[in-house]
Amino acid sequence: MDFIPYSRQDICEEDLAAVNAVLLSDFLTQGPEIGKFEQTIADLHQCSNAVAVCNATAALHIACMALDLGAGELLWTSPNSFVASANCARYCGADVDFVDIDPLTRNMSVRALAAKLAAAKANGRLPKIVVPVDFSGLPCDLLQIRALADEYGFYIISDGSHAVGATYRGKPIGKFADITVFSFHPVKIVTTGEGGLCLTDNDELAQKLRLYRSHGITRDFDEIGDSFDGPWSYAQISLGYNYRLTDIQAALGRSQLARLPIQHAQRERLAQRYNTVLSGLPLKLPVSLNDRTSAHHLYVVEIDAKKTSISRSMVFDALRSNGIGANVHYMPIHLQPYYQRLGFKRGDFPVSEAYYDQAITIPLYPALTDGQQDYVAEVLKSALNG
Image: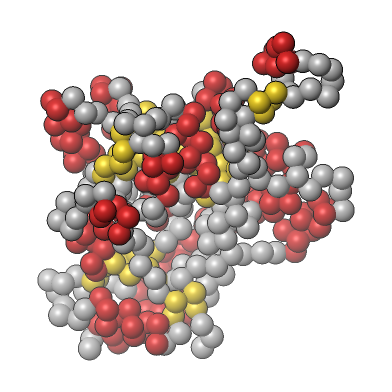
């Protein structure tokens, strides 16, 4: 059997046609496709504003900037994420800390967050921003986190990089955070090649985000003021970056969004099929919750050390040696060498560490066939049976 990656992009003829149309148009960048893509995302998630950028790391960065995160201030996030969820604070000169995860959802634990906030208030060191992460596509419990934000006075940047189109409490994600961030990397739910986006219902924040993605430059007459010299005028009114998305990428993303419901349905079918074919094995499978729907960006199993002596490394090696591109998501951020140099160490967030020590991501993407999925399951069963 051919190599089976843990994930892969899905490109169809409609995608090629959309990109080709832009290549033959007058605008390869800063043209009309950007706004169309942003409006499609905003409508899908029932939000007022969407601001597209070159990648999700850039989106996290300008989200922190729009919320005025600065030197000496504090951002908390989940250890179980890609490093960008924490690095965005460091770009702003701010400090980072983490909140341990719930062992079932693998998302930020609301109970741990509440306890840490109470202690932080007593110590006079509350976070300015909290970044919960929708790991694997399962939305965090944002309603409870929103209640804590209102009580303790912090902003929420929801890292929904895994969760485009997911729902929480019967609504698309993006309704309880100040800013929600998406990723359009090739292995994500929707791809623009590389790309990211900030979603917000706050018009003032959206205007800041638009400035920060494009050098802090505006052509708005009211904002230019005394710097207006003529119809050619523009003014840099803040320090921003070149974080723009191109029309080529936006066209690809908009085409992909047209079949998002079909892609979600296939991911859901495959996830439920894994739940069936892997039942009875010494594995902890992803949790399903009645109040939210997962986008199923990843399917992660954990070796249940209480039920088998087979190690994670043995299972991982068996998968890889049989042509299955298993992966591990993620080494906890606080165990990365950079963050260890900041003073974090093993033992700081034990639930995240226990999850990481046994986790394996197995293939899940819409083009995965039933036969390939059965093969993955058979290799897993063989490895776990020693």
